[in-house]
Length: 214
Image 1 (cartoon, helix red, strand yellow):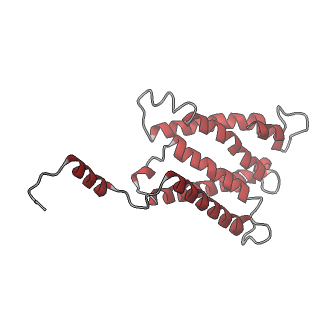
Image 2 (image 1 turned 45 degrees about the horizontal axis):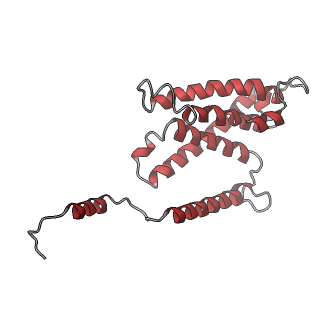
Image 3 (image 1 turned 120 degrees about the horizontal axis):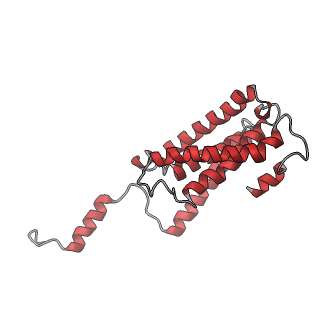
């Protein structure tokens, strides 16, 4: 081999690709999808059998608080990933980035449900766990799915990105936007169904109808 021979552009490109090859397995799209599906199914089965299954679950937290916590965990992910574009998390490499985001979302979900049910629920009957507290807590998420999600997806962070704002300011602003809009939706459509003074026929939409709409 001639050590003095010039390196071609192709060879140089291959060296760059080898040097920048990310950690992990390299698989095709079909294999990736199948493995991804298998992981989701396995994790779901483990979570169900540990926390929720009425017969063989270790803690048997289904339907509540399992349902409320899962609802809020999904909404936390919507905010962190959609509205916040995983700001800060993207600075970490996978799988650490995903694990940290999962832990943060889980902690936020537990804190939020705890504050609503055992904090606000201590003086507001609608959120008291002995009554409709778990339902009321979960129904906030029903509004949040729509209002937090639409800001980042259908609206594409408009108008904040057009004004030159970047993360984390876009996420912070959209948090207050989503919070405000979700509160309006909750107190107009959901709260009258779960409040202590609620009466049949005196609501804009019955709870079942509101759930179906959203």
